[in-house]
Image 1: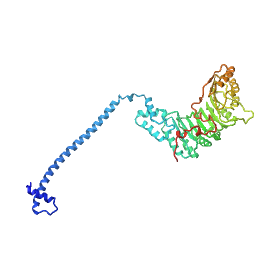
Image 2: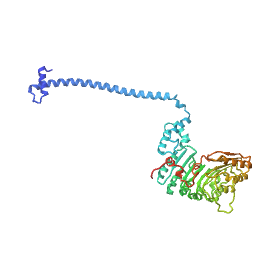
Image 3: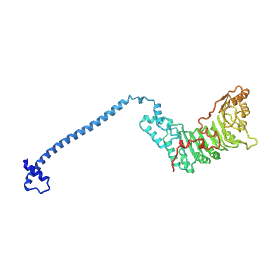
Image 4: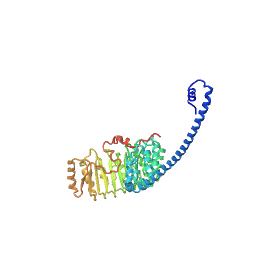
Length: 454
């Protein structure tokens, strides 16, 4: 160690810019040696401490890992008695439904998000997958809008749906007011339905001549289990002529329910219609033969709804032939000023229930004589139902005359309600027949799927 004076001289030399005297260097060498020894000692102590800390850190990491393993084991063991394990599958399925917007992909603006959410349910575990795939409400409906710009997106969505859906009794709703502009696009779209075993209900809503394109593409495919088919034209402008050439080629051997809302229904041959048992006709034709010819090709119908959407119904034949519907049990007729012509030409010997629905501006008493005459020709009618809003005087006048002639047939007034509650077109033509689809359905554009440009 340096004495006090040498230490002072050394410190002054260190903190000075002057050249140190030569007698300072021996003292500096002694001081360097001393600090080197002390630093070496502390380095050894630090290394020892680092080794100890590293060892403890490794042990700490191992302890944390072991704790996590045991926590997971405890969680899994405790989950054996968790309340959710005792939930019935129906409750879990209902939880899934609450997580999905609107419960199904119907009217869902983001179908990709819907599919991604559904895939979560099917990939968590076997139980969830089984419940999700057997909750038919999740998969049952697809409501899709087709247009010239978005057909590529529509094809992608339908392909994903048809490849994913595991449930039966599926329903596809296609809205195409603006149509698919080319036949190749239509063929690619409907080809995805070919030999589909799950599709039971198909709704096709188009505008004008686009119906021709859709049906031509659709009939190229086999629909082995299709049972219900709804067809509707929004614009009601002669597009129904497509049925003449295309509906007869529809390959749907199990089709039994058909609903048509079109401009006219001229048809020359319809082997497909022979299996129809429930039929809804809403037609803007002026010719009575359009109704009669169509009914003539449906010999097995048991339930019919007829709605005339135009006034001035005429016959191109001076003496049109009447038609006998031997299996008809239930007949829905909208009270139209031209309904008398149909009543005169329809025979239904097995009819048991007649339902009359009021159309705007038509009085039931003005048709009373025709209704009574028609009922008199039916021998098995057991009930007359009248739907719509009527004044008390109208009801009283009708009941008085009707019960006097047919006292054994009850007349039931059911207020303003619609008969075919599952008919998607039942509310579109209650007022002005020229009212556009958008005016009758102001929320349609917000509810249906808007697809992007191709």
